[in-house]
Image 1 (cartoon, helix red, strand yellow):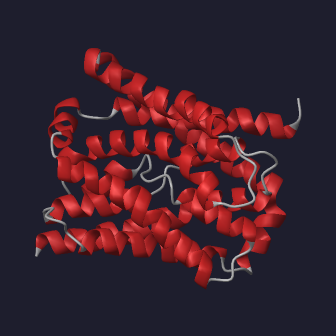
Image 2: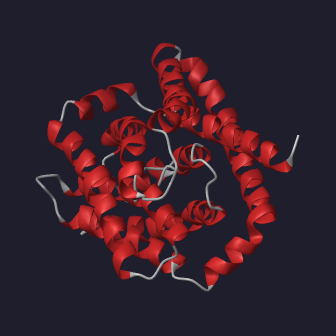
Image 3: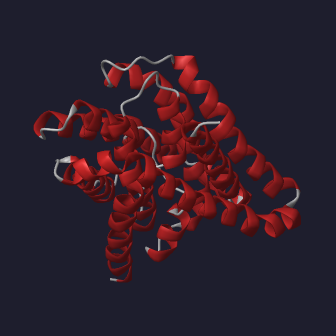
Length: 280
């Protein structure tokens, strides 16, 4: 077994465990209540798969990114929300009742729209729509739904296993990061001298500010949750999509890995600002 094959297995365990942990933490009653708000659902779809990709596409046209870095930015623009999203909403004093619904809608939307939009947005990539959709269904949506089902029907068991599942996800995130540094250190080093980091930060800031400042009828605490969901990215889903691309450029993977620290930093700053705004 090659190092690359081991790496794919590590990423698979990281993906499945993190999505299962997200499902185990969703509050059923709160999620169902938020899902009955059609405006909230529509805005997730608009910000997630119209405005977000449009912002990323615009940035690739005005910032001199390499083709691979531009492809990576477009790819991550199609997968909103991260496992630490509920924590950010708590820090921002946002509406936690909508966090679970956001995770469900964003994950299902990612599984549907990412495979359909990648061939349209990213020219030159050899991809199969079903080739991208199948692993997303099996490794992203299925673990989330299994975790959520356990939470709904076996809540005591869910509470018991959730910390262990979450810990496994955290451990394999660290292993993934370490193996990424080992396998892609040259590409990551080259990214420091490029516009890749700046483009990502600008994307996160723009999508966060716009989705918070343009209310579309949402209350302030709902807008903060929407903004933080759009700021953070489902890196597990993007990992799966990356490995579904035929002969992908390693620099695309570097853009995906950069999401972890950059989105977290922007989300933490945004949560602090939103909390002050909520208090005022």
